[in-house]
Length: 423
Image (cartoon, rainbow, N blue to C red):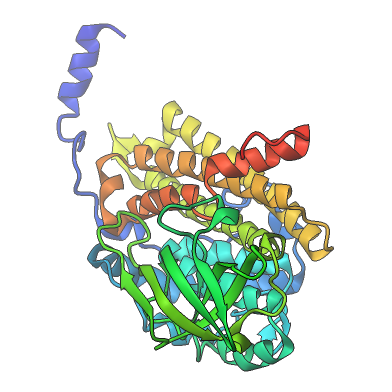
């Protein structure tokens, strides 16, 4: 096309909203399509699921659509937590995930992953807050606690009458969790905890926080159930986050925090024991990354079909279709791999490296998908009410938590080469 013809085309379409940022918000607030729509489930993951797994997925999706999505943008912008959603979440009977007994649902790892995906599709803050309680905190007690500890905590946590948090990450120790610096010193029938924790979701209001510390008796990592109101325990909400803003993360100080010996997790004797919890929950994070990516893809696809440019929808332009197809290819690959590894988890065959591969791969690919979604939506993509900016920011957090991208990469690298590349 000649330069003259191109200028004439622009002139003839000067009223076609070339730089307009005023697309009505309601354009993106229509109900998300049924998950078996071929454009959204291109490789038919639905056909690999049991009916129970489909039912649970649909239940989680319906909750996200009805309860989370209509209100979350305002909470996210104000850096506040929608606590009114917690009783409604409790009524779904999701808490406890794969744990059997003690009032927990005992669902499959596939079903638990789909639940995480759908809740995150609604909002990452809500999903992460729930995942900390239902996964990290409850799994710590279920996998590592004594029978008495399980009986004391799990039934009320399954009903979400009691809320749990998980304290592992520290200000100077992130993904290298085996080198934590918090110390637990035995003193008669008590342990005295001293140290600090950081990025602890829900700790500002939790009824119990599972704190991991170096046991001065063994030199190994032990876990302790620190109950609300314990002297020497202080949790302060972190400020100025630009991701997962509706999730209250906390800085924790442990200053001569006295915990009875009965609150020491009976079966946590080393980092190897703790790793059982991390492997199980890392797969849930991988599913959550899919939720962010799926939401962004669906919003971008709906936007492209409706956004008019030069007298036609932008979905008909080659560059837009290229972005959408690349998003879809990564998204479908993420789903199938994570489903397969969840099946292995249900069979008791999931390895640490496999869980790390899923988390590393999905967090990285989700980051790219949400970026392409933002590009497709142009200036409208940075408006909070259009949702993609929220998923964009939250995907940055997922890229770093539950093991950074680099550390998870090295875990997989060690597995396939037999050589450890980090100390």
